[in-house]
Length: 225
Image (cartoon, rainbow, N blue to C red; front, side):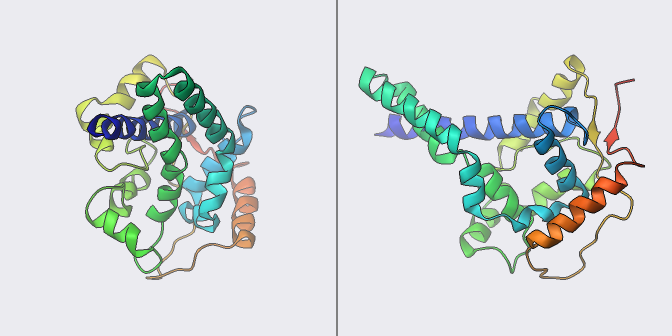
C-alpha cells in the first residue's frame, strides 16, 4: 500500500512538472500573433494583461479542456492493468487524478480571500498548493521570469532556487517572446473582494487587448533579434 501511494505521488509531481513546463513554453515562445497554438497564445497574453480573466471559468471548464488527456491516461491505465505493469499503472493513476488541478488551482490563486472555498484557503495557509502570494511573484516582475508551477507549492523552489531550471533551459533554447507584465491601460483592482469576472467582461478585455497589441509589443525579447 505504501509503495502504491508513493507511485501515485510521483504521478502528481509529474503533472506539476508538465504543467509548469507548458506554462514556461507559453510565456517565452508564444507571442500574441503566433500562428501555432494561437488560442493558447492569446489566452496566455490576456492572462498577463488581466490576470483576473481566468476567474470567469468554472472548474469543469478546465476538466473538460483536458478530456483527451484523461481519455489517453485512462487507456494507458487499463492497458497497464491488463499487462500487470503495476508500477507504471499507479504513476498514471496519479497523473490522471491531478491532470486538471494545476489550472483549477491557478484560477483560485487569483481569487481574493473572501472568494475562495475554505478548503483552498486551508491548502494555501499550509503551503500545500501554490498560493496567491507565491503566484503573485510571477506577475509582479516586469516580464515572465520564474514561478511557473501553479500547482504544488514546493516544486517552484526546486525548479527556480535549486535547479535554476528555466534559466538553464533558456540558455539552450533562447526565448523569443518573454511575456511582459506591464501593459498600457492595464486594469487595476483595488476592491478587497472583487467579483469573479463575467464572460462579457472577459470579452471586453479580449477586444481591448487586440487593439493594444497592434501598437504595443507584448513580448520582451531578451535574446532574439
